[in-house]
Amino acid sequence: MPDAVVIGAGPNGLVAANVLADAGWSVEVLEAQPEPGGAVRSDRGVHPDYVSDLFSAFYPLAAASPVLARLDLAAEGLRWSHAPSVLAHPLRDGRCAVLERRVEGTSAGLAGFAAGDGDTWQDMYRVWSRIGPDLIQALFTPFPPVRPGLRLAAKLRAAGGLRLARKLALPVRRLGEEEFAGEGGRLLLAGNALHADLAPEAAGSGGFGWLMSMLGQSHGFPVPVGGSGALTAALVSRLERRGGVLRCGQRVTSIVVRGGTAVGVRTEGGESVVARRAVLADTSAPALYRDLVGEEHLPSRLLRDLERFHWDFATFKVDWALTGPVPWTAPQAARAGTVHVADGVDGLTRFASQIAMGQVPDRPFALFGQMTTADASRSPAGTESAWAYTHLPQHITSDAGPDRITGRWDAREQEAMADRVEAQVERFAPGFRKLIAARRILAPTTLQAMNENLHNGAINNGTTALHQQAIFRPTPGTGRPETPVKNLYIASAAAHPGGGVHGAPGANAARAALRSHGLRPLLHRAQRI
Image (cartoon, rainbow, N blue to C red; front, side, top):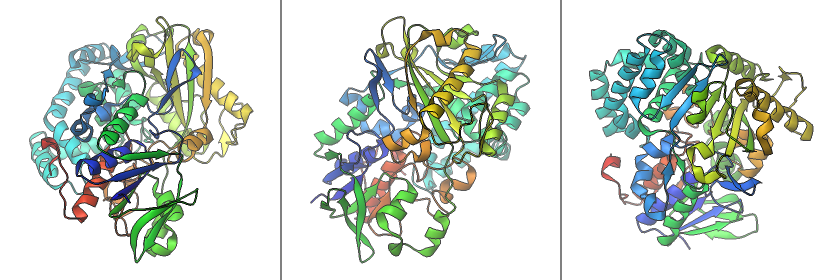
C-alpha cells in the first residue's frame, strides 16, 4: 500500500512522484499508455534512421524551471543541445527575423529591419534580466506566490511599474507596433504568442509573446540529446532509484472517495490500489472531476463552472524524414531549431481569425522544427528530422480552403490537411516536398488517442487566455492544487501555472500533499517560498 498514488506518467506526474519520493513517501504511478512520458516522448516511427518527437520538442520552460533544476536530471544522463540559432521567422522576400543565441546577434538582425529596433530589443532584454528570475519563480510556485511576488513587485517598480504592466497586458500586435518600427521584432513577439492559443489581438498576448521571446533569448530553445524521450527516461530513472514504482498499461477508471476523502483508485482491470495519504492526478480537469471522481462528490458550483471550461486550440502535426536540409528562401532560417511559417503578423491575424470563426485555415501558421539542426544525433549527416504543427478550431464549422475538411479526420481529410501544411512550407522553401522520404500524420483525434490529456489535440490542457489563468485555472477560485475532495490534488497542466514542460503543477501538488500531512518538502534554495 503506497503513501501516494499518482495517476498519469506525464512530466507533471513524474515530477510529483519524484518530489514525494524525495520526502520519503512510497509512491506508485499508474499510466494508461504502454509507455511513460505523456506529451514528452520520441520514437523512430517515421523512419528507422530518424528520431522523431511525438508531441513536444523544444523546452525553454524546462531550461528555466527551478523545479527541474532541483531534480538534477543531468545525474540521470540527461543532456541538452541547441541549434545555432534559436528561432527564425522568414518572409517570402528573403528577409528573416532571427532570435539568436546572443542578444547582440538578435539586436543586430532586428536593426536591419528598422533603425533603433536593435536597441529596443536590448532594452527589453535588460528589463527581463532584472525581473525574469523572480517572474519565473512567481509563476512556478503555488498561487498566491507571496514571497516571490513581493520580490517581483519591488523589481517591477524599479523597471517601470505600471507602464511595464500595461505593456504586458497589451495584445501582441499592439505591443509590437508600439515598440518596433520594423517587422522583425513584431514577428518574433507575435509568433511566440501563438505558441499558445493567443491571437495577436488578444489581451495579454503581448505578455506571453514577450515571455517566450525573452526565455528564448536567455535560455534558448534546447532539446534533449537523443529525443524528447530522454527527458522522460531521466525522470523515470530518478524515481525508480528512490524506490518509486511505475506501472504502465494501467488505466485508472475511478478515484475511490469515502467520507469526502480520496483513499485510492480503481483500474480498468478491476484492481483497487489503496493510497495511505494522497492521490495526485496528472489528468485534465474535466476528466478528473467528471469521470474519475464523480459529480456526487463535488459541489454544484464547481460542476457549473466546468460547463464553461475553455479548451485551447486543436492541433494537427506532421513528422517528416527529409533527405537534406530545408531549402528556405531566407538562408538564415536554416540555422534555427524552430521556424515560424506565416505571412507576417497580418498572416497570423488572418489565421487566428479563421480559427475563431470555426474555420480550418487555408494558409495555416506552422511551427516548424528542424531537429537534426538542434541535435545532430536525430538523423544521418546531411539529412533532417523535421516536424510541423498547426492549430485548428476545437469545433470545425467550415473549411476556408478547398478540401471540405469537416473534422471527421478520415484518411482523406488527414492527407488533405498534411498536404496543406506542406504547401505552406513550400511557399517559403521551394523544393521542400522533393526532400520527403517519409511522413507521419498526427491528427487531433490521433493525438488524443495517444495522450488523453490532449483533448482533440489541445496541448495546453485549457486555454492560455487570461480568463482561465491563476485563480481562474481550471475554474474560478481553484488556482491551487487542492480539490474539494480531501487528499486529492490536481497535478496537471490544467492547474496553475498551466501548460509547458516545467513540472510546476506536479511539484505544487506534491508540496500541497506533503504540507497537508505536516511535512515540508525538500526545496532548492531558489524554490523556497
